[in-house]
Image (cartoon, rainbow, N blue to C red):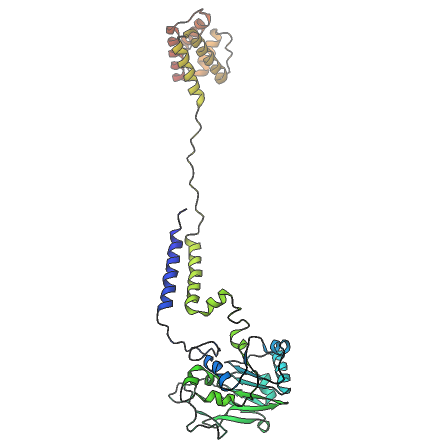
Length: 392
């Protein structure tokens, strides 16, 4: 079977596009993902890879919701839990388990622009998030601790630095970092036997600023407030439940820009193919020959046989018998007696003249009365019958 040309065109287009996307220079992706396996500027792969060497000896990735991790995973005596994301999305069940986790003497670091009100009310602060402004300068950030402060501060110029943490219970909160206006941006809140570290600038932990000489030490100074304990690094907030080994092929395709566009191209192409080329192709209609009247051929064949054999008598009598049978069927005549009454009825029903009908009936009577019929008699009767058939 020949391949469909539309399908071949679609496959060729997809192949060319995929090769083009694969080999063309990749533009820098400035999208903040905060994912620990992203090498783009605003991923966190550099920090995640350096943490075991610089600070925490045991760092484990968590791909479960907070509630599931803290209730289903065997935990060590004490540990740290780190969240670096744009939005810290935790529901009531997550927060109840998180509070219980810290109350037992564990530590939680949350660096995010948005935190749920149910968390901030309990800890006594409010995250003030302001819309970014177009400006050539940003508010610098710095640590309060003189041993950690940097002359001139830290400038994270992809963020204007105007967000801050408004303290509702200042007496129980320790400010660890401020912006140039003196507003808190990094706080410590003791809770039970443990502590919450709340930070409002997650960009500071990304690859771009960890590798930049001017800001490379900021993330490690911030993490130094966590004790040296086994540390859980949350990726569920950013990547969901499944890691690379658990991802389906489709999930992997959707994470790769070139493959993702090729996937959409395939879907659109198949839809177009279904609309324009997927119509049901009608089968070739075979040529059906009309039914043939073989009776006439049979009669002609039998006639030629009789004629070739020279049996003119038999053929003449059969010719007469077939003709009388036709008159009976067509006009409903009684052909037993070929008299004057039969002649008048035949002329009236067939529409021929009385003279023609009488001549025809005379030949039929002579044929019946003759003992032997010749070829002349056959031809004479045949001409009379054909003339009659042409007249009616």
